[in-house]
Length: 119
Image 1 (tube, rainbow, N blue to C red):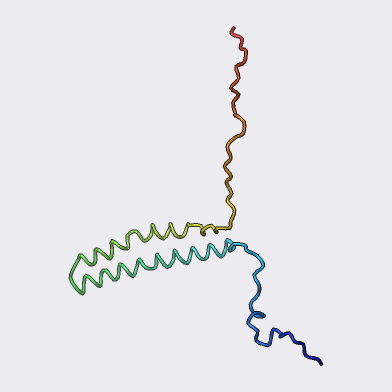
Image 2: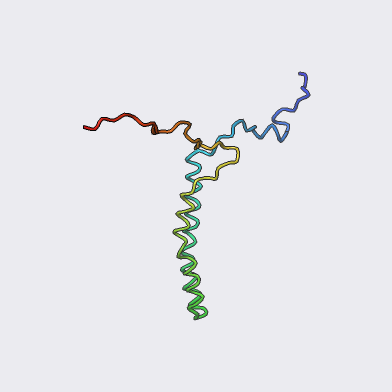
């Protein structure tokens, strides 16, 4: 058997193991949804430990100001989590714009005077 000069995929060539990307398609809707749900879950998961931390800080130092600051920081978390979860992925620079605003070439209403009959 003659050996070829090109490496086979089993030879350990890095390029042969990584497929070539032949499309610039965006992530699927399911992948985008999973990523948004993951972000939302992480942000909302921070809120419960923050409330527990506020209770621990109050019991450790007896200072209500530190606890109120921790609770105050956790109040906008649900709102921020919803905004982040509902946000669409950013538009790529090479993606075409969908809205093409062109001014109307002709007036939509005729401006010429027409003869009218009063009666």
